[in-house]
Length: 239
Ligand SMILES: Nc1ncnc2c1ncn2[C@@H]1O[C@H](COP(=O)(O)OP(=O)(O)OP(=O)(O)O)[C@@H](O)[C@H]1O
Ligand SMILES: [Mg+2]
Image (cartoon, rainbow, N blue to C red; front, side, top):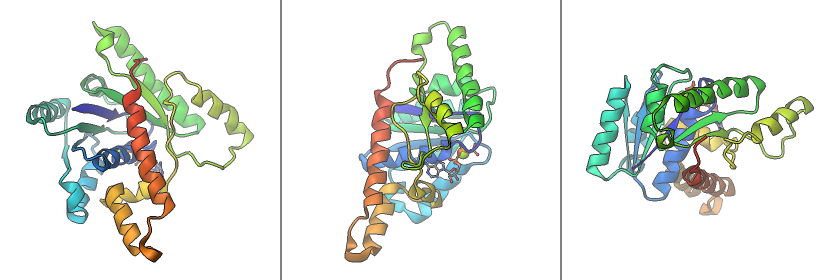
C-alpha cells in the first residue's frame, strides 16, 4: 500500500480537492483506496459519506475514516496493510501546521504540498516545506523520509498571468521540489465534492449528453488525474 499525504498550512490550496482527484485516479485504475481525514472540518470524511449515498459503485472501492490524532491514523494504516487489499491510502490534513504534521510525513510514502500561483500561497507553503527540511535534519535516518513535492494547482491554461505574477510563476515553477506536472483548474474536480468520483461522474455526463458521447473535458480530466497519480509515484528523490 502506498501512502500519499496532502499537507500545507495555506488553507484552500487544494488538499481536499487533490485528495479526491487522486482517489478518482486510483479507482479508475481498478485500485482500492483508504482515505484518512485529519482535518477537524471533515471535508474528506463528509465527501465519503456523500459518496456512499450517491455513488455506491465507487464507494465499494473506497473507505474513509476521520482521525483525531496520529495514533488513530497509524492504526488504520497498519490495519489496511495487514488486510492487504488496499492499494492507496490518501491522507487529507488541515490547512494549518499542527504539531503532528511530522508524524503524517513519517507515515507517508509521498507528500504533496499543493500551491496556487499567488504570492501569499507560495510564501506560506515554503514554510510548510521548511518543516520537512527541519524534520530531515532531526531524524536519525533522513533517507527513510518520503519524497516531498509541491504541486502547482488550479492552473488555467491559456490565461495569461499579469506581469506581476509571471516572475512569481517562474520562481514557483522552478523550485527544485516542484512536481513537473501541474493540475488544471477544472469544474469537475470541484464537483466531486458532491460525493462522486471522476469515473462515475463521467458515466453520468456521458449518459445525459447529446448522442451519449463522453465530452472531451471529462476524458481530459480523467487522463489528467491518472497522469497526476503516475507523476507523484515517479518522484523518488527526497528533498
Ligand atoms: N484544481 C482545481 N480545480 C477547480 N477548483 C479547485 C481546484 N483546486 C482547488 N479548487 C477550489 O479551491 C477550493 C479550495 O480547495 P480545497 O478545499 O481542496 O482546499 P484545501 O487545501 O483542502 O482547503 P482547507 O485548508 O480549507 O482544507 C475548493 O472549493 C475548490 O473550489
Ligand atoms: Mg481541505
